[in-house]
Length: 443
Image (cartoon, rainbow, N blue to C red; front, side, top):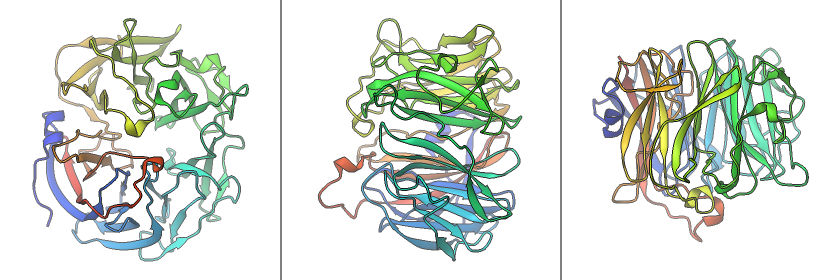
């Protein structure tokens, strides 16, 4: 049976978010942080994908009215690399799609033989048959009509292309949706790569943000950008002016904030949400004029973008090399809207926690706390390292959670993330952690 339990991290985020129940899924290998995935469908089916105690890719399903899982172990073993996360998708007919365990490796892709059935997962390892030899960052997502898409990067840093496919449910096959890469390859002879995030608005429009990076070093992040599209074919900037992919660093009309390199931008610290007018609001970290690290927010207006500084800290988050060897630094997340105020939860490197209340109509900070009217949790960030060196990881149901009364989350502990170049000579078999489903009430 699911047991009632209070999780400390969630209980500190907001007073009206409560953990109702918790159910164990399985034990998992936890010597390196690798992200898992979760889908809860409108038909009450819950699907989870993860790596088990032997680092084998595993998919499980249950009915949310029951506590037992049907699981299948797939023929793909995790190597030592936090890039090699696993992602789930589900099409309109209920067929399960799964991809992962890739960092500049050939595409790994499975599809169920029957709807809502994991006991027969077919290993296909191909969608289109082109540009699938050096894959990283797989992502399944849906449009407003429920059609299934798949995006990924093919290539390595500096020569990679972001590719978007669409699943043709009538023909049961994938088709290339965007005929050109979303972002340009090496620009003017220099290595450039875009790190993007996106959200689907209530009106069915996709909103993309990204920043460019010039090297594997995080400190070379620069130039925060934005574009939107109703169909992932026709694109426009924040002023509604048509723009054509592949997007390039010199496309000035896409720039939100022209932050130079080594000025505090971090590709893992950018989030986007849309307000009740379907206008995008972006939050990100960069240095202020004094060189201190701060959280900023941006929203489009008639003159371009209205940018405001939310924090007033007096420290500098120092970047050291690549992302898996840095301190956790500044972490923040959107909790949702309370009337016209966007609630932003944050934590500093010194352990200070709190919330900003941003009036997105006026782009001003408020001072009053309100009950949430809508909840948006794209991903709860890590709660921090404990005395044993373990981190608390959360993964939110990747079906849209906005406006739900109850949502489900995955929770597990792991060591901090580490990339393949830092792999030990012998991969340890321990520690082992419990992977749990957590049911959360936001009423």
